[in-house]
Length: 347
Ligand code: AMP
Ligand code: MG
Image (cartoon, rainbow, N blue to C red; front, side, top):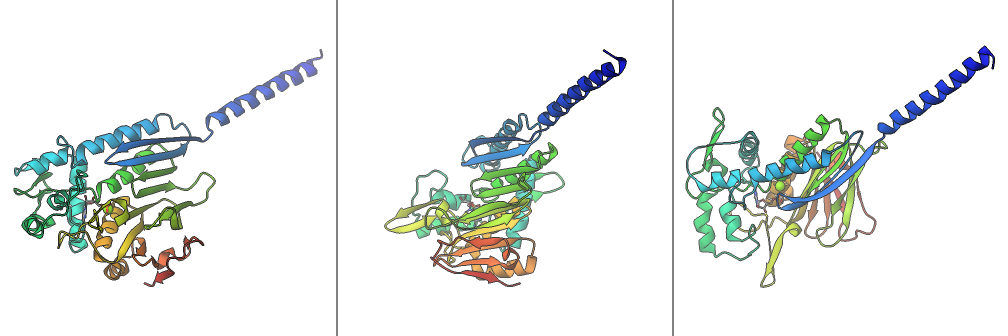
């Protein structure tokens, strides 16, 4: 073998070797897909993540969600929120509970009290948290309404303390899953995951874009049957829905759902069957979808015009679908939906 052919051979072996290393290293950087389903925060949560070296991310997310349940569960007697509800002394809050409590007080005011984090006594009277549903008497509701109102919550930002007067109890069920979605997304971003689909009972968080670079197509459920009325294309957004169809019971042919008008104590009847909010923050969307379901289309449209920091899809009880102007190009109704027409709310 000549010297030259030896070099050529050596170079050939080297080339093949470096090609294998390159292949192996590119393999190790291949995008992995992991998914998981857990029951936490009183809802079925499904997580789907794509990324390099995603390792134990799903397990980390599950552990994190259980830790939030320890704080926000209103039904578990040992949760932090239940401890706050059970006493009328000042209590120092965890940073998580403090953040959600403070935000809920601020947004309750911003939504003119239609979102109210102190509805627990009324929600309990209807049996929504225990699944022992009943229709409370008007007298019972009248006696509970004085215990409802965000202004009854005493909160000291400087010392991270809160105090609930006797009988006042908070229910963060209309905001906590949004907070969970936002902070889960943050956790994933910290681990360099830039593509994930998080679904927490009505709260969807579409992190980044799909791995092929396209938008996520999020279905908006038909409140009156299976399937969806349409879908919205999004990238890096939360899509949060509140609807009477999500939890309800029927008593003497009347349907009673879990979203309550804080001013009457009765399930909200504003003419809306569902509200979906498309926003950067799922916690904001969670608050707004609940508040808008109570306040109705007209007042919600005014709120949107005044704020312009989210978009919305409203499905009316008669079937018409209203979208805010910003969704004009990203929302489409499915062709088989014939229960109503699509209308755009102008700014
Ligand atoms: P969501 O599914 O986000 O609309 O939240 C509904 C849940 O929040 C209910 O199951 C109640 O626990 C609670 N809730 C009901 N009505 C209201 C309201 N007007 N404001 C805040 N929380 C509410
Ligand atoms: Mg909500």
